[in-house]
Length: 75
Image (tube, rainbow, N blue to C red):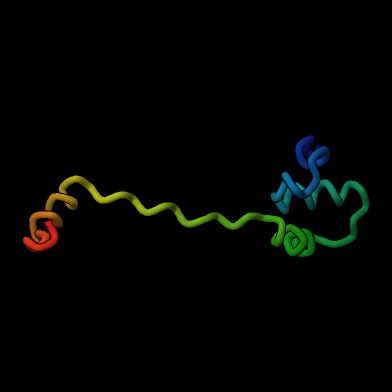
């Protein structure tokens, strides 16, 4: 299998595909297998952040305003 130019030139910082890295390192004589490469790459992978909460819809906003009116003293 030919090595990926992205993984070769950029190193593990850009290529976090363990299979591609394993294939590349095997061609250079690395004796260990997929699990060793996976363990090495695991801390380099970024964890996805939770998506931002969606803003409430206009219907939800209107419903909340109409069912929770401000007291006369706070207007």
